[in-house]
Image 1 (cartoon, rainbow, N blue to C red):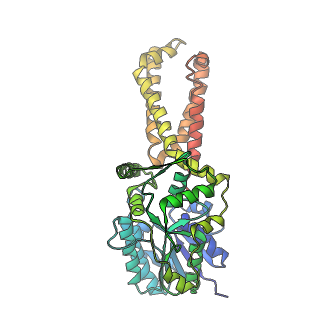
Image 2: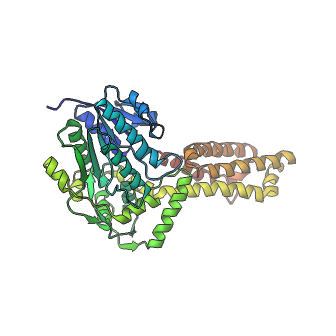
Image 3: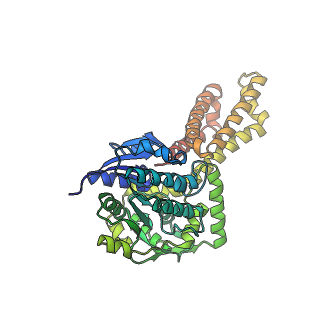
Length: 434
């Protein structure tokens, strides 16, 4: 039996990192997770030790020394799709990993690097180029090293590319598809975790391995297989999304990225998909004595339940929910300012002084506008939803006390607050990131 190791998992509460951490614990290893949001990581990985660390700030060898005490192996599952408010590709993929490699070489600590198919210096995206730079730095560090390059990772949960596939599969009746003929090779999360565990235990020889199924499938086939697994009815018609529309969608998603939204439709993801996800399964088969399960077998071994269908539908609807919520509050505030005399007249009619009535309408109209804008800024969105709920309840209470006749108004201004309040509550729950 292989001796248990102390493993430091970077990006421990991410899509891949969380599964790897759990698999290593199940295999008898002691796992410590590194995360920049320790409370969130603690909720995702109960029972696993988690320590605070931000790769963006760990670009020097000295920054790693305290983290490597008693550690035997580091598994790097951290990554970012595109530069943004929370992400720095060069720091996270290259500079921090180069420093890690040097520190591990000095201390005799092994490294398992989760890279990506297509991570080459000449790649079309900064994501792939910086991944390749990190891989090269590790290879030159002298540390014991395994570089694993998974294809499209299919797991019980979904994030990034897998989340996008499930969103597409959740579209009712129609099946919109960009790049439907793009070749894709997948890998099940269990196979990825098995490869990591083999590297950690030393059973897998050091080297670089593509973790992909034997035969590529078209993107259309991957989405259709996902649709069947989720239990959605087959699409009645497939709508091909033209290249110009795909480009426009990517640029819009990039714009939302500036507001903190990490959409799987950003231009980097679409460019990677356009290039295809293709690797060579043979080196891993020869080294490990086994291949990677094909996509139908991966799905056959996963359970699709109601919550997976619901999550896919909610992911599809979330952009619309946030957009409608923002529009409701923005228009509410703007209409209040545009119809200021009429709105103030409702209050003066029940005895309010004119100045106080006007000031109140202006103040609360501005509050509505601020809340409508705040929900569009991702770091504030969840708190903005809570503020919307509080303000909506305040409106209902104050209006019931001051102008109870509004409940009988034919246009139902107070009644319409109730579904808006519920939409804010639903959006708050949908904004949970992990």
